[in-house]
Image: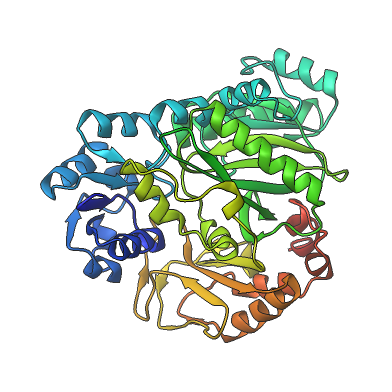
Length: 449
C-alpha cells in the first residue's frame, strides 16, 4: 500500500479523497490554487502545495507543477479526482514515466474509450448496442448533410473529445445542422483543444442510464449496477439515483453485462462509468465511457456498500479486487441532488460570493459531501457545485420523502443555489412516478423561464 498520495484536485472531491486516504492510514498531500488558499480541507492534509493562480489553466491543469508537487512531497501516487486531468491519458503516461502511480485506468484504456468514436468502435466489437452514427469523424458540411438525410432528423452533433455537454448540438434541419457544426467545432476546440465532431441519430426523450464498473490489473471486472441520470439541464446532471426506476430486471441485467464486456475489451481497470441512452421501448445504446470516478459515485456507494475511492487506491497499489460479482447486492434506493451556486430563477446564472450562513440537513439516511463552511467564498474560476446532498432509504418513495425534508432543512445564505429547483423536482409527479427523460427540465420545468 502507498505511504503518501497527492490529491490533484479541489473542492468536495479533494476532501473525499483526503478522507479515504486517512481511512486507509495513508499520508496525503494536496495541491491548491491561489483562489483556494483558504479552503478548509487543506488543513486536513499533511502538506498543501500552491501550484499557481486561480484560473485552472495556470494551476490544476499544469501537469509540470502537479508532477513537481508529487516529487516535492515524496508522493508515490496521484489521485486526479474528476474533471481537470482525470481523463488525460498523456498525464497518466507522464506519471508512469516519473515512477508515480496514476490512481485511475491505464492510459491505453483511456485512449481506447476516451475518444467517443474509438469508444463506439470498441463497443461494436464487444457487441454492445450503439446509437446509429456517422462512419467516423465528420469533416465537411456535405458529409454531415448526407448522413442526416439518410437517418432522418433530428441528429446530434457531438465533440469527439471531452464531455459535460460542451460541443454538443441538436440539429432538426439543414440550416441548424450547418450552423451547429461550426459552433460545436469552435466550442470543442476551445474546451478540449480538439475540434473534431461526429454525428448520431438523436433519440427523442430518452433516459440516461449509466453503469458503474470496477476492475483490477488482473482482468477481474465487475459492475456495481446502474444509476439513472436523466434529470439534466443542457446535458448537465442535476439529480442521480440508483436503482433506475421502472427499469425491467432483464434490461438491468443486460445493460450491466454490456458495460462489463466493454470494460474488459478495453483492458480497463480502476473505477469507470459506461453511459447509455434508453429509449421508450427500453432498448439501450452505448454513448461513452467516463474513464474516472464520477461526481455521482456516492449514489452507488450507498446502495452497494462499496467505497469506490478506497477501491481505486487499492487497485492502483496492485491489489486484486476484494469483491466478486455475486458479492454486489443492491440495498434500498439512493438519490443525489447536486447543489450548485447558481440561480434557477435567472436562467441558472452563476452565483459566486461569500456564504454567510451554511446549515446543512441531518438525520438518518442523509449524506452530505461538501467542502463548504460558513464564511467560505465560492470562487468564480471553477465548476459551481458546492455540495452533493444524498439520501438512502429502504424504498424510493421513502428516499424522495427524506430528500424533500432535507432540502427544506438546508439553509444557505449569501449566494443563490439550486435548492429551489430540487424542491420542485421532488414534488413533480413525473419524477415521483419515475417517468422523466433527459429533456424534462427544459420541456416542463423551465418552459417559459
